[in-house]
Length: 496
Figure 1 (cartoon, rainbow, N blue to C red):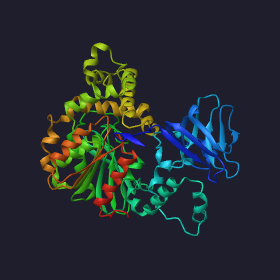
Figure 2 (figure 1 turned 90 degrees about the vertical axis):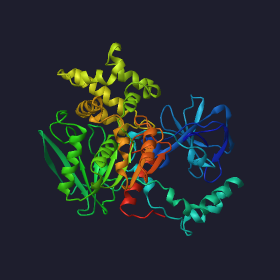
Figure 3 (figure 1 turned 90 degrees about the horizontal axis):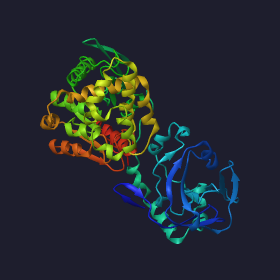
Figure 4 (figure 1 turned 60 degrees about the vertical axis):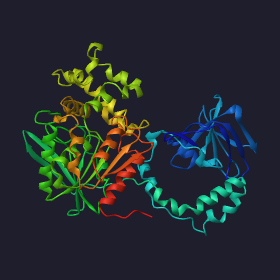
């Protein structure tokens, strides 16, 4: 396995593998293409597992080198190959195609081929994202696995046996590389609505342990909303977290209202919530627009911030806005960009944000909704490194898109009511506040350059550029760093 940046690239070579008992062996030469894991119910049943890892080999360079597999025709298009002696799933085959799919777990060296996407996600078990965080245990010497280790190894080439022994010997050293994931689901222990003036009422909730370390969670957008998973970014035994829907969105009322809705109104709302919580200072956690709002709040009220955890840095400069809405990301997603610009006539496309603004503020409901959905879907489909329906689909909901697009566009055409470069200019006000900056290397909406600039302007900050990640907090490498950061600031020691 080689890499281009941090994207795995499979290099042409010879791959060998076979079943557990050694009765069936195979050889494939060249590239194992389209490596992925499939969550569909057919693959779950075929493997007796939660998913099946697959990649395809060209029939021209694929050979069975020992024995013959048995075949089960699971549909009129597909047959599945397995060893009739030990039952090992080996192949997913569509005989009319010029390739055969290999079950990657049957390779002699499964580490050599890394899946690059997931399919069949509609059948994915709901707790799949938590698997990486399960506590590890060593193999019991009295178990069947241990007792048959030497029998199995006779069916592996000598070099592979040595490699697997070396990996097993170093298993303890690898524990700290297990990716952290969300804490278990938790319900709020309190919730309500707070009148903040100007006709606005904001929804708030508190989760964790009353009286524990105070923190506030700032959602993205502007115009987004909090979700139950956001509560799970904090150890509930160590934190007392306040989460809230910002003005005009989520459960806050009135919905989609832009009057008296600016960055500085939201900063004042955070202060109201802090006073309501009875916290002298608290940890501020924000991602994407939440990082913008978190910086604005911390620079205005540094004495009220104990620590900062910021993800997907967005400093709201003209260059950042143009990159996403005028020219830049358009070059990476030309198909999605074409859908984004479709509602706007060619003679208005030189100022996309303002062209959208005219439609999003329209009194005509159909015009407004069409623009809102196009604006919202553009963001939903470009924030993850690889397509992720669970993340992008909510952006197409009519009610969500209306509030999200109107409020976000309202903030952006007004540059957040900040001077150009203000957040980086005033980063010196963060001096003495411990902080962690987490940013995906391939974050499309928020170029990594600005996370780097913030780190340089904020002495003592800790920067993590996460390889193989885009913008969303749910991407495994980003989520791991976020959990480690909240654990760190709660005084929780690193797991060994």
